[in-house]
Image 1 (cartoon, helix red, strand yellow):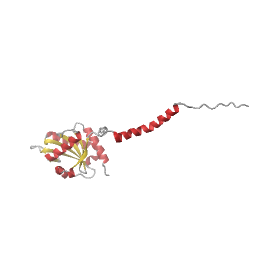
Image 2 (image 1 turned 90 degrees about the horizontal axis):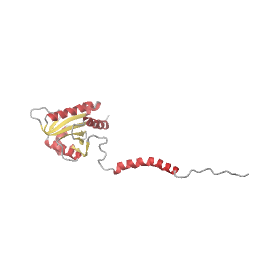
Image 3 (image 1 turned 90 degrees about the vertical axis):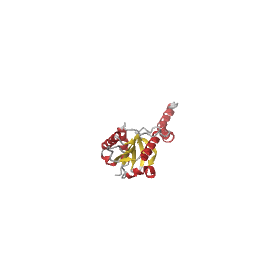
Image 4 (image 1 turned 30 degrees about the vertical axis):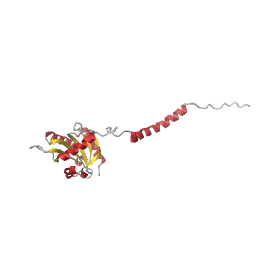
Length: 198
């Protein structure tokens, strides 16, 4: 009796190792990419992936800024936001149109519209014209808002713009103009959803 059993062929070579390496890479590479974006990616890169406006960093705190004293009269309840339109010079027709557009944006927000207030800030009131319901003729406030907006935009202080003010007295986002009302609405809805108190 002879036992002529041959050993079973072994699977050797490169294929199993390559498969194992591919499986490990499938799990490790996404973790490394996420770590790179969180730790190494330069600040500001990808900031426009979700937001349409520009963040003001650090936020402008009107409670601790003497130039902003007139805005402290504009009180907001917890969870409320204000859209502040600022313009240099007097609050003329363009100022009123901007306030009207912001009011239209607020209206289409839906059920959270009651949590949004609108104000306009200019150097002076118009001569004999009308002004938005919440209007501040305060050149120092307007200049301070424009300076904060200029910092967010990385340049000179713009003559006009829209800023978001939260209930804690923090001005934290800037829109250089009103050419993207859908973007303003999207950012506002996101902020309202994130700050809902009940």
